Length: 174
Image (cartoon, rainbow, N blue to C red; front, top):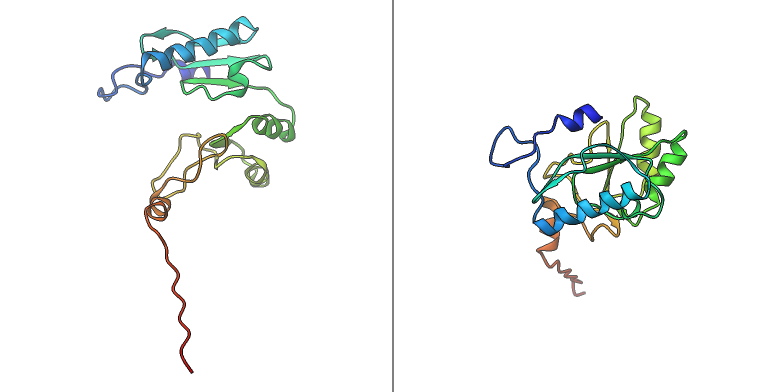
């Protein structure tokens, strides 16, 4: 994962060679930097990244994240991933569900029963099996649970949001 993370090209999103562009503004990049620095100060291990340059933040991997730091319980809104070790699927699901957010989750496995169990038990808006959490098609519903949004996006859901259904009942006389 470190090698794959370091292979990302960060830069101008108008350049076809760029994998990852800037954050939306400097304040957002500073917040990501603050969260990463807090985690490192509390004992997290940085595997790669962690550097901000203006609105750009290098893709970052951390492990050994202490409980209670912002990265352990808040959405980071930046290119930061935290690696957790676990011995059982129950531990992994419990850790994933132990936050007030739930947009998308991913599980990588060759065992369909494991994938379906995780899909059933993970508290989130979507589970990607053998695919990253940024996978999305316009036709699929997209949205989270808990503190990650309200409702769903996608063509069908947009139509429902923009229409006002009306029920008309008619009883034939006689």
